[in-house]
Image 1 (cartoon, rainbow, N blue to C red):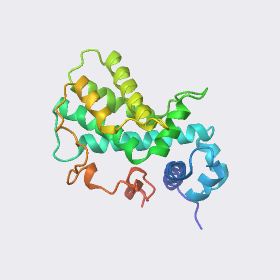
Image 2 (image 1 turned 90 degrees about the vertical axis):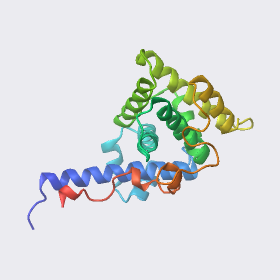
Image 3 (image 1 turned 135 degrees about the vertical axis):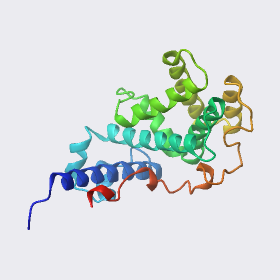
Image 4 (image 1 turned 60 degrees about the vertical axis):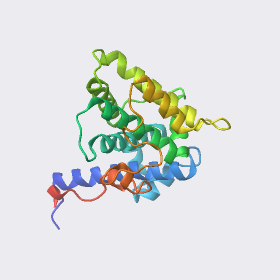
Amino acid sequence: MSPRSALVNEELRRRSKERLLHAAVELVDEHGYEATTLGDIADRAGSARGLVSYYFPGKRQLVQSAVHRLMHRTLEEALEREPRTEDGRERMARAIDAILGLARDRPLLMRQHMAGLLQAEGLLPCPEQRRLAELLGDTVARHGSHEVDADYPMLRALLMGAVYAALMPGAPMPVPVLRAELFKRYRLDWEMGVPPDTEVPGGTGGKDQTDISRFFATEPDAQSK
C-alpha cells in the first residue's frame, strides 16, 4: 500500500479539526461547558483524544473557536441570503437579528460562551473570531461609519450586552425589546432584517435552525478526491 500523499493528509487533518469544532458546539449546547469534557468532544467527533491538544491548547480555546465559527457563519449566511443587498441599513438589521437569534435559539450555548469571556483568559483570538470581527467591521462600514475602528467595538459591545440581557437567569429581557433598542440606535426600520415571528424563504429564517452541520466542513473536499 502506497503512503498517503501530503494533500490527502492535509485534508484528513482539516476534516478532523472541523469535526472537533462541530462536536464542541453540539455538546456544550446540549450539556453546558462544565459538563462537557475534551474526551466527550473527541468521542463525539470520532477522533483520537490526543488530536484535541494537537489542534487546540485547551477546552476554553476549542469551545470559543467553535462558538465563534457558529457566530460568524450564522452572520455570514444572514448577510448574504436572498434577496442579496448592498444596503447598509438592511445589512445592519440582518446582523443584529442574526446575533440576537443565536441568543434566542441557543440560550445555553450562548450563556456559556458569554460566561467564558468573563474568565481570566478573556477573549482568545483565533481565525474564527477574526472572521467574525471582519464581518461586523464591514457591516459598520457599509452602514456609513467613518470611524470603523471606534464604531466596530461599540457595535460588538452593544450586541454582547443585548445577548447578556436576553440570557440573564431570573431576569431576562425579551429579544424584541432589545431588538427595538438596537434598531433605534442605528436608525433602522422595524420591518428590516427578520422581524420577530417571521420567516424569510431561502434565508436563515427558512432553514432548520437545529441543523448546524452546514457550518462545519466535515465532508471530503471535492478537490482532494
